[in-house]
Length: 263
Length: 371
Image (cartoon, rainbow over all chains, first blue to last red; front, side, top):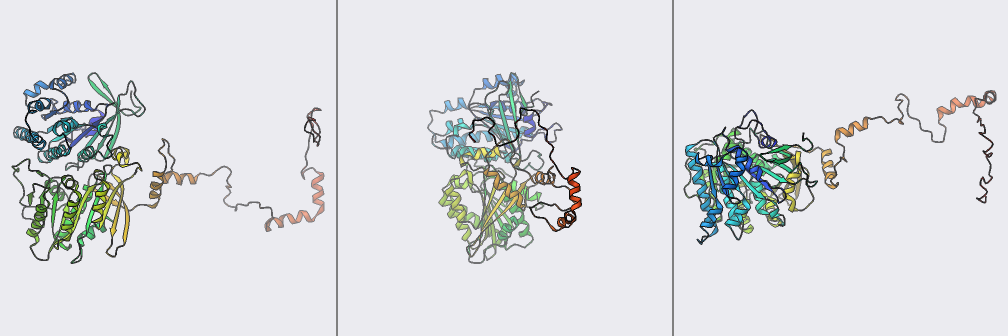
């Protein structure tokens, strides 16, 4: 595992003493971003952390937004080879772009399509659980596209899907990492879908542009709320903490710093 | 005050009356209804076990967390639950509410019952009663019902159906008390109000910095609370039997162990009241209690600082003490003339600076003012 911890790692509860090697197990992490500031880099960083050679954690990745080659290219820059991890059975990449195309002709109602997807994930989790005892992370990139892909009428089925994914966190102690776009819902008076997700999440990471406008050397700010209402909250020292820091996206990594503390 | 809620729930209602019911309301910015539920659950469980409660059993209906979460929590509180426990039954509406999984995973305790098809309220109601009767029998012994969250119920069904289910539970002769939690940001005000009506008590968790802006910003509120996340006000409204309504407030603080309640100190409540009225500025307009005390200690340079003598303010009259000391010089004319001749009695010595300066007179210096 990468020994040099950045501010995001610390905010998520990773610490140098490794008193808790997987602070996110059994938790739901919600990454919220907007058009001005994409939060996908957080997802990439968490991917890298899960697949790091020092751990044996595995990852189930539901890609609605981008094809495999995109993630492969980015993660390679961060020093992680996705193709190798795939053959090692540590990464299960579910390309939803392809799946959606394939059963587009079939006339199925939305509920069963989402239920089918969940059963597939559950099957994969159980299969992975039988071979390994380490933590399993399920990542969704991104939830708003699942809403578009799976339902045309209402978001209830996606919320049901989320609920079932939440049962995985308690049943199999998985982590669930979700990317979602906030500004899609900004015109709604009561964005129930978004609020439901925030309620469900234990950790909310919000990526937004600087309040003072765009800057050359600061690309945005992250706010991390660690609600930590989970059964392993007892030992987590980061419970009920809200942290705010800025970041700069570099070619092969991210630099995090507190406002005004950039050296 | 959290204690008084607990006592009401423990004691239950009189015979032939509706069971007391509590709504715990949380928001996105203060998501601690679960902590309050757990607090009440632990207290109710221990009082049932100790035989201090009027109810002899507890039916827990779980929607937002798995049954194992609650059993683990109770274990942490020193309340051990095993398959043979006669006082608790859990209805699991969390694991498979819609029947997607089909095959339940093994290893469930016999006291946990899986409930599918949660939108079928008639079945849900009968399984709650059935689970209760399993514990306490058909007689007059009563049991409490705990619903961890009605958000999921409201999502799967409509408000009238949910409130009728809750009312049915309340009016059942064997139910001694009932509580549920609700996230007010997720539902329309109508729904919140309706559920408040059918409950006898309402507990509201309010974050420390309430914002007066609309509900739209529920999400932004979460990011506004900053260091105060995990702290706030706990308002409780009791509807008493005679129709009187009593509102009480307390402060809550959530930490690693759970939720703590403490009485509000009056100074803090004043600050909180003013806080919300002031515009948001980047500098501090208020003084903290400590700052105020320190400010009061500062002695201003023009203040009278001689602590041994009392402060005397000249009000145009002579006071008695002055009259005595000045009476002697006035009576002897010698002393007065002496002072004048020596020049110490007070005289003005004035030198003209130059000839340019006109002697002080009423003359118009510029000849243009027409005096």
